[in-house]
Image (tube, rainbow, N blue to C red):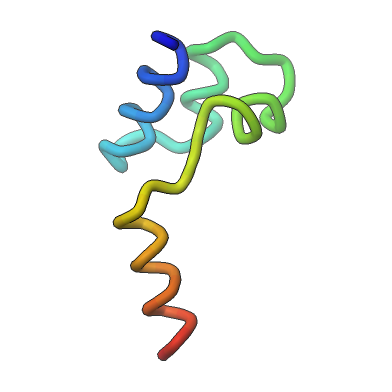
Amino acid sequence: MLRHDMASRMKGTHMFDLKDIQAQLGHSSIQVTMDIYTHIDEEQNQKVSGWLAA
């Protein structure tokens, strides 16, 4: 749970990219980081939907 929280918070700051998060978590594959430890929150989902609608 703590790893997921850290990865999500790092992503949420917009200061770090997924490769930074991958390095901090020690994953050999970026796919693991993307599939397990990050997600799109509701605000980000709305931004994507708005962009697609435009």
